[in-house]
Image 1 (cartoon, rainbow, N blue to C red):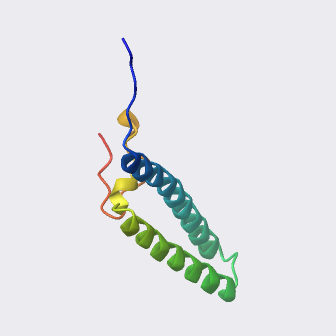
Image 2 (image 1 turned 90 degrees about the vertical axis):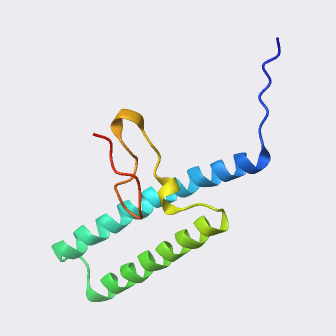
Length: 99
């Protein structure tokens, strides 16, 4: 008995893009939190805060465009980790964590 796996190229591409964008979104959120911590601690000059803010806004816009280009919603990036809940915190309409 042959157990051949048949894959749809469009589905594979979309799922791969979903995984890549999920990793990018996770990194974006971590960078944003780190920038906020540094700003709150006074570790950044006004110019650095401005530059970080602009960069994070540009990255946010780019993520929105990439998701739209690939038929994804931001909530699609929030992987369900089973009993651990979701990968990303509730943001952008993501599913609530499991109880």
